[in-house]
Image (cartoon, rainbow, N blue to C red; front, side, top):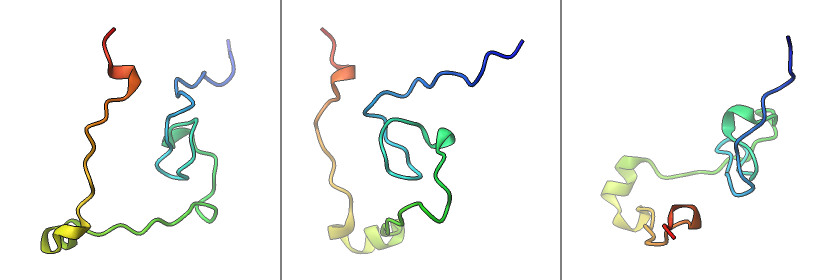
Length: 68
């Protein structure tokens, strides 16, 4: 019995790591490799040699994780 494709559990704020768009996970991404944006990032070695390249950490907590 085929029920169709499974429903995605991704929320509207879920960010795809392949195409950098919201609303789906990377394993659900339909964008071809030629259409994906290239985002250059410094290597870990470059980050260690130049502290200015380290990513900035935030202390913000997503609303999903806040206990009410």
